Length: 318
Image (cartoon, rainbow, N blue to C red; front, side, top):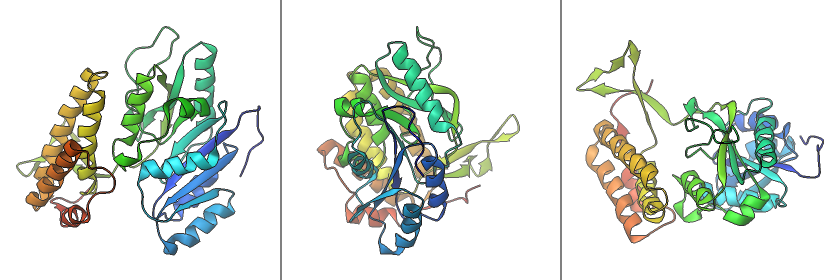
């Protein structure tokens, strides 16, 4: 599982896990071939997933088990604390369903080292594309690097020094927009978030549905337009986290957050349009907004989770 170290620093990986399938064994094996140590944090999946985790451990990963589900931020933090990176160490985080291509982490490290050599105050390196989505801002800086725009945490690399400077993930956010908050925090510290040119990480972003208006599928230049929808309960966290992040970072990232909020509102309109029944999802979103305003954080209330569980999407995914 571990590879020979090229220098004094360690390359570390943290993988979050929740109710994993056997695919996790292969994914961790791929990651392990590219780093010195892999830490897999199981976020309260339950004893029935012990067989899968045992197989993951058998391929060389260190398993960190949380007694109950605490959310992606808490899981990543537990893994990073277990990894205990020194300032010079490099650490990359992944979701459990990220199938990491060969040479992926070396490409991240090469970009990091190039940034350091150029005198850039490095904060994070991410793949240029994640699940086919471009994560790079247009243009290059004075050193020829392309900067990222709110990259997904899976496949992103930081250093132990960055972790010591900027701190851990915000556990009270629980799931959604945790990575966006961390990106904005790094920017506030004056740290650069850049992309590794040409690097891509395959990934599944929720379920994809055909875009329809008044029952008709919408096409553009002969291509079916699509919409990615999350599990209904996630919209509680998305709404709540959006309120929290806007309140905290609007002063330092006003333009970006205004655009983000407009896109979020547009997406939520489609969420309500596609939901059956609609009233429960409206209540879930409204409760997320309300709790964000009142700063009621952590895991969603049981009654909201039960309400979200009654919602289905009105059309089958592609």
